[in-house]
Length: 351
Image (cartoon, rainbow, N blue to C red; front, side):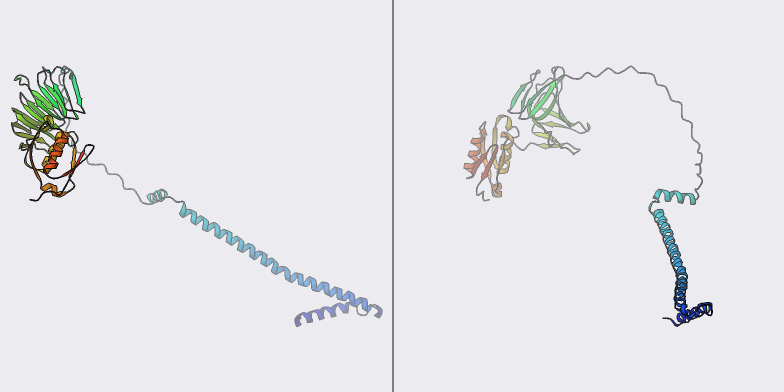
């Protein structure tokens, strides 16, 4: 035990014993000592309680101060975070706008403006007579070659998949709207021109014969003259036109501005209508191209050596089967036919 505490207890014992000394008998000393011990114990207990009260209160107050400080700190941090998190760009811009002074708008300088001239009132004109739609007769040919006789005595041979429309009063208005391929034999009437119109080209004649190819898929429009004279012009630019005579062709390619005039070198350009074919030492590639156009089939030759072969022969209104077999036997080739496709194979030719 602490010496200071022992001395304090001894002093208390002496002071308390002095209060009873001389006033009690020896027989009751034992009781006195017991009471004295009880008194000393109670005084020590009260002293201990007083000393313990202050630290407890101090500790409680310290805890409250710390808790209050923590709560206040959390509140301040939360306020700062919310201020940065929920302030939008627009609000920031508004705040900046409040700080930055706006420049006053400067009115533009006033310029002298000439007064407009008074509007002239034009005299009312009578309404134009309404355009009457031309009544047309339409013919669509999708399967076989077809011959069409027109009211004026002209004749048209339509190839497969060709179509035309002509004016119902054709004797007064010889006008045709056309697409595809056809051969025209036009009756000559000097007082009434004969006009054929495609998508981008037009043909005008008085009396002649010619072949027309107006391909709506590729956009190529072409005329090949057999007899007479033909005017071939562009509908997109009327300044561009050609005058074509026998043995010449005119072509209007899509996307090109100028018309092309050429001499006709291929003798089989109208073989599709009568199946008359003439080949004189012709390259096999040209022969197959003419057969495709004439009979409407596809021809394949996988070996490039076949391109060195040439063929000479004449055919008059013969079937495709007969023509193909004759070419194969002449050049020692093998022929295979699948539907509308012919395949020629072989060793080819040596130059």
